[in-house]
Image (cartoon, rainbow, N blue to C red):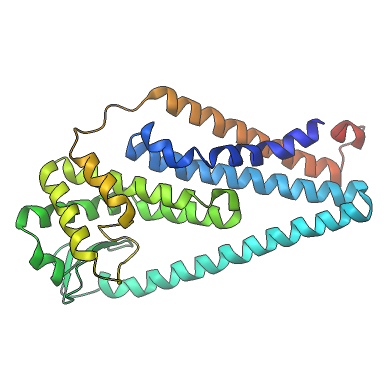
Length: 294
């Protein structure tokens, strides 16, 4: 029974969090939520993957008959498919980073800002060794000076906080664990809200106007980058409304404490399942296999 609980714990936690994750922005400040989601996705992926491997090892080495072997093969196949999907995602991200090098190495950049001759209104951040904020001429001409500066501050915040790392980590975790499929949208919204608040620290009304105007200008365009100032268009209304209210209150410490406790419990569970694998394949001297699975 203790083995079943250990193997199922991380999957149960992931399932219970499915309806909770979209509402976490009510408990955490944007900057904290970005880190909680990326760390939680990493911990959950490690825990669920280790439990799946442990389950397959137990079925194969303990002996579960034909049904056990079939279940173990199914688990291995699902893990392999998830690994292939994650690998393909990594290849696409690497190709995108290489393509983005054209912006980073442009001789037309003015410091960390590059205005590109494109009438499609857009603005996005390009990470790397020489990060740059890219703004199209179409958006630049449509924004007053104060709103343009707000857009630049927003994109600089993405680069400074390395939001692209958190987003890619969560997207990779979602490919490895289908129960995390809703997490990428949540972390993208959190990164946009964090960048909004960083930009609004200088001029909150101008930041709200810039976001609303950029969303209106981009609404007729089908070409939009993943790191665009608009982000998810369905979330723009929520972001503008948040900017029309005072800066969020201080972080609720109890929420952070609960998140830390849950992640520590999941890490402990991952270590336990790893120990199960070792005990199934190569039991320690004087330790009967029945002690582990009983």
